Image (tube, rainbow, N blue to C red; front, side, top):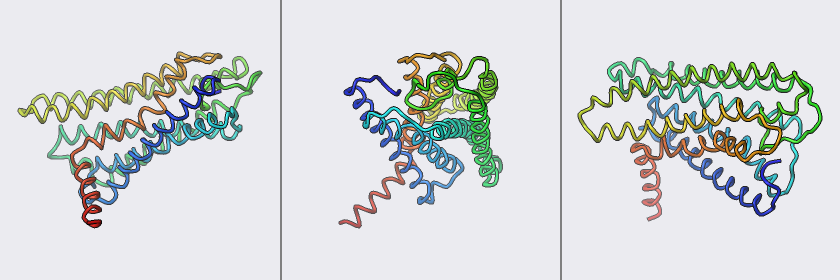
Length: 299
């Protein structure tokens, strides 16, 4: 069903979603290009950033283009296969992103708290294995949630009160008592997510403890200005997901439901380029070199 039936509001939502999508697409593509072509951006941190940007592009592309197209064409339908694919891909990319964010927090811990051993700890082979593990964990979570959601019988209405096929909205259409397996999967998944989040908090707590011992106030500010926005986005991502999946399983359209879904589906892909990369001095230098070379060539 997407957003309210009013045509003007639907067009406004479509315009807003399109702008956010284009901004996320351009920001993340820029990061992938810069970390690929610039030889100074080949450290583990930028390797993880490149993968994060790829995940963000895929994650936001699963839901937003279809929603915008539905709003512009006044269509409110999706095929069963399309709905199944959305559920799998949303959980797949969200799970992969969260696992990779944990890896990135460990990378920052190793870089700041163990600088003398950083290259040995985060060698190329280890980084590749960590990224593979992140993608595999996302694929595993996507598979079990698709199995848990679509191995049941749906009864009554076929109306999904969301702008994409999300699991809580689909579970309201399941025949009574048949959704227990998927609820178990959701609770177990969020249990693991809480453990990951605790490990992430521990990594950043150690980072903060180390940073506070830095005599330079400028160095402390630089580290805090990078870590805190990252921590804020992760917290919003997790809290909105928790609320949507565990607390707001409503059979009716809800503005709060939609708002929470927008938070965890649009916020990370659009803010990650700003938080992790475009505020980074090395990324700015690489961007300046590319545009500077083009300007020189044109002159």
